[in-house]
Image 1 (cartoon, helix red, strand yellow):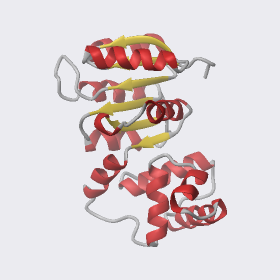
Image 2 (cartoon, helix red, strand yellow):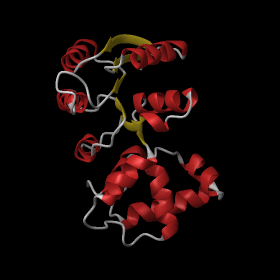
Image 3 (tube, one colour):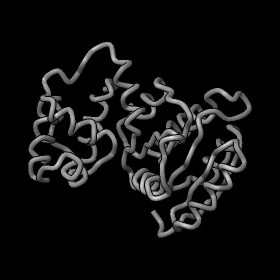
Amino acid sequence: MSAHPRVVVAEDQYLLRDGLTHLLAAHGFDVVAAVGSGPELAAALRAEKPDVSIVDVRMPPTNTDEGLQVALAARRETPGLPILVLSQHVEQLYARELLADGTGAIGYLLKDRVFNADQFIDAVRRVAAGGTVMDPEVIAKLVAGNASDPLAALTPREREVLALMAEGCSNAAIASRLHFSEGAVGKHTANIFAKLGISASDDTNRRVLAVLAYLGAA
């Protein structure tokens, strides 16, 4: 990724699209396209192959799930293409599908729960770097939709650790949130991987697989 990550912004509301463009530019991003419809987004993703794309769910021409449909198609064409969904709504089916390939570089934030610029810019950078960033409310709705519990073997503390992992938190951030040592977090994550049957591999991929199990998508 370049020093000035290349971004495509897809948002049908002009004021929000313009605001996002200026905010990203002020934080060192290169906004290579800012579009207001699904077809424009598809064209921009094919032409630009950006470092990260910020995508609204409901866009013209259908004003239903156009943005997510285009994002999913782009991920099928270019596996691992970084996508940050910024939406008013939780679309459970598509959120699961975005996560299901296990490659990371995915985020799903709710517009009315982004409380400051630093929070948003940090999420964009983490997705661009290959991370997974999920709003806790999105996670809650996905988990509520599960018919079965894949995490029955986990202790309550391990579930807390995994929930924060699903939000995209590092071990250090989890330690800070739960007020215990980073070493203790490491032991909990090792137990989580073992109980979920996730074998030793690249740590980022292990975390993604654990999050998928947490969401019932694995």
